[in-house]
Length: 196
Ligand code: GRF
Image (cartoon, rainbow, N blue to C red):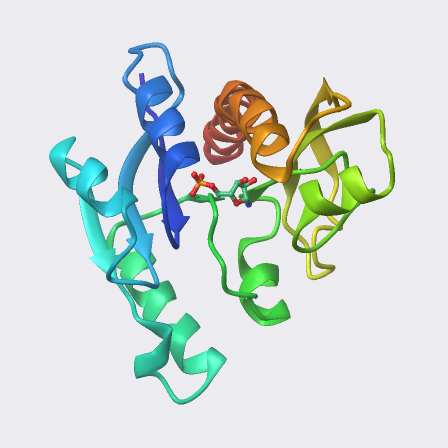
């Protein structure tokens, strides 16, 4: 069975990346994680990826004068790995519309809120401050609108009366790890079908 060649982009802990790597171990999973790219050398997730035999690379955005130069280096690496689809997993750089347009329909992101609610940062703090009763996470296709692309999958969790941002985040994260592999399987299947 041919598999879609997927890159995962991270900036830190990488727990969603780990969930995707675990899911992709399944012979029936339609995608292969061919590389993990971080814009930060200290991203904790890199060690896990390397220990799992996945190519890792650091492309440090600070080493480039412009966003475009950084993205050119990223694109060059992705082409060298014959990457067909991208999963952003806690990747903390805003990408330009040009880069996103090149990958449109082939790039996913996971966001810790029930989009369109709470785009941007500090989603758990904001949900608690608003007295929200329900919160969650969304996987969406990436478009030039920040956190604004078509939503593929969502999962809801309750917000409990004594929740802190940390306790709520942990409840949401467990759902992120469940739905992101499902959404990536959908994208990988679509990539394979498009290439046939
Ligand atoms: C997750 O909450 C994800 O939704 C958000 O950033 C966090 C990354 O966590 N985009 P991890 O690096 O996957 O553990």
